[in-house]
Image 1 (cartoon, rainbow, N blue to C red):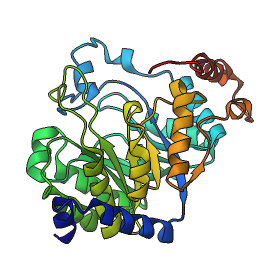
Image 2 (image 1 turned 60 degrees about the horizontal axis):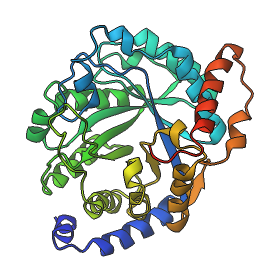
Image 3 (image 1 turned 60 degrees about the vertical axis):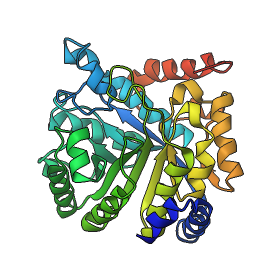
Image 4 (image 1 turned 180 degrees about the vertical axis):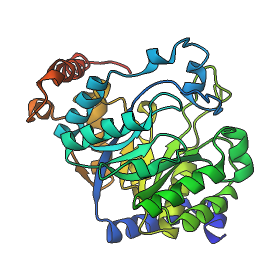
Length: 336
């Protein structure tokens, strides 16, 4: 309650100072760049009120059209390894891939990157089908208040997400949740988030700010205030010093990065990688990290890294080159 009262009283700078001190003491100054790899752009549920995929469901008559070519997925993983980023998780909508297919993709990415991956594939009861290629499981909670969650994500019951994460712990995987700031949640819902993290002993939390997509209920809803967003992140850092926090922002809000890092974020995410790498936008991300007095792991500007790799799969070369060409084409980009 004390943290919520500080937010209500606009004592945000006090929260940021405390959160930053905790972060540097417990986690150090390193900041990771995170990239979610999407397996498809379709979801058979398609009723989360904020989600891009809910608008796609009405536009795509054949879900197979929204499935990415697997070689493109592997090429993206190879380039993420070259530039020193982390794979935030593998993500895909419901009803697209079987467990066997997701396991095979995960195993191949593990071979490419030498790192096991996080999954964010919806509610599943088949976690025992995976092996060492998986490090953890992410539950797309989005908002922790049960009643509000039922409204925002009617086909993703919170109790089922919680059951999946408990199972993940039993199987030996780490546990993460995603939370979207700016959906219209109440400040007191922060207590629900605290309770959920404590109840499930969450290892990692990924925050996003609302990105209003056309043809969704949130189309005309503005993104949340930067200091409100930062105050939520800071409160979680203060309450849970050891938790890993990843925060997402968008290309039109790059100035949020510094304050989110001061609020306790260990990593940042949600960038159109190949449209930003090496140009003024990628460099601005690096400047934000520097001005926050943090140390960046990986690069958002070193073009030479794109060509440095020991690709053991020659069949991926055309796909890798396509992404590299995309980066070079956007070097003089004026807007995204």
